[in-house]
Length: 203
Image (tube, rainbow, N blue to C red; front, side, top):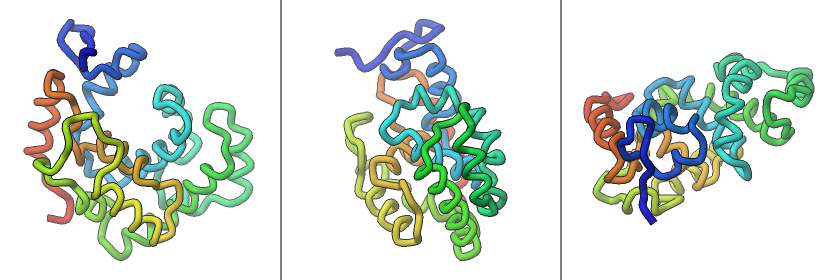
């Protein structure tokens, strides 16, 4: 089975893009490109937790609704959410109405504030777990790594929820801590160029 599909310009992209047309712009402009924004990193951790047991297609279609519901994923604001907000969110048909995951976002926002107070930024902490490229398996052949296991364990120790090793690995793929585009994909080189020019937070 081929590992790519033709994109809108007929050049090869990672095969998973072929599921729906909306995946192509996400793949070409976001997935695998390095991110240093605390807000965007927190958002992705939250969205990956909501995806657990579901497809990214479902989450991507609702992403703007999630952003509106969770104050743009500004964890300083989300940390102040109350039970009234939980009930509001449980009544919001535009998001995934799962109490445990909603409460986890609020909990994790509080933990994010604590982490920033200790570490300086969420980005500086998370990027410490960037794998050495040479140690990675072939693209899209793994669902966890020693680094995703270690980061998951550390976050759980600090009180975070819905941050298992598989969730964290998907987060690393999406946020550019790993360039997991297959070798034949035209976006792989673009993501790698972005990674090479990216100043790692805290360094």
